[in-house]
Amino acid sequence: MIKYRLVRKVNPMKKGEPAKWYGNPIVNEKVDTRALSTEGTEFTSLSPNEFESAMYELGHKLARGLIAGNSIKINDLGTFRLSFSSDGVAEVTDFYAQTMIKDPHIIFTPEKSLMKAIADNLSYENAGVVDD
Image: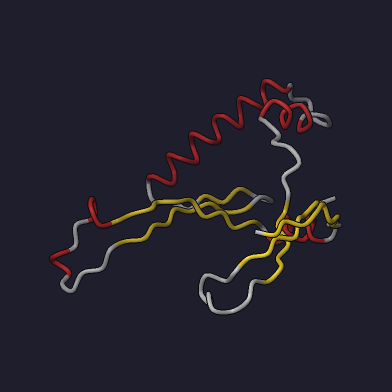
């Protein structure tokens, strides 16, 4: 069950309008690699250490692939790709990537099957109200 709080916020694009109530999800706990490895090997012949090692390697290979300019698709999970913003220039010759490209970040697009599995099984519980 997903817990949420109702939080009153002003839309930053419409500061003159009254604040509205929005549902914000609450994270129950952070599940670490060890716990995920133990749960992930429950119905396999892998040991939790092997699973954890594979996840560690996946992280390194994922970083290496993204740095190389690839998008990385992990079946039944989704696709990872890099994105960034940049300053604009009037002339192409005035663009300097090292100083003008900013905010590199990873975009994750989940597989439709993953989103469906989650959406089909969600339920919600109100855990309170926060007024600014």
